[in-house]
Image 1 (cartoon, rainbow, N blue to C red):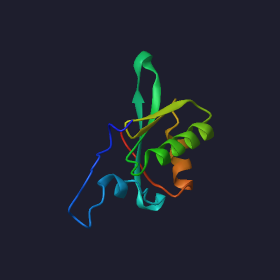
Image 2 (image 1 turned 90 degrees about the vertical axis):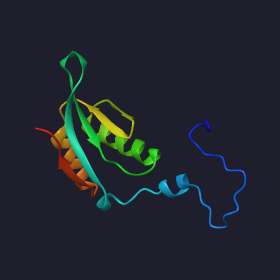
Image 3 (image 1 turned 60 degrees about the horizontal axis):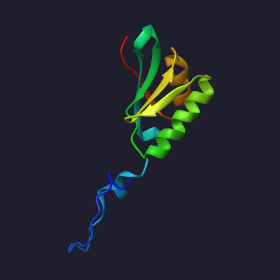
Length: 108
């Protein structure tokens, strides 16, 4: 549970702040550039991949849930990426642009 957190008991620096506290703030959608690509999975299946999100895991999970719902498809969020089942690149890009994100198509 606490494996990913650095536990500082005492610091002599009066301006000390945990780095993790600073990185929890999620930039607004207009400040983020997301890359959308297609990825071939096992069994010749295709998935849509969203990369480049900066912010908290909670916000990433929320965005992933929104995309899965609007695409009517399954998917997952792991390693800072959103994976949507199926070839949904154009729909995902449209949804992200409507939410205010800057989006670039990655790959062919």
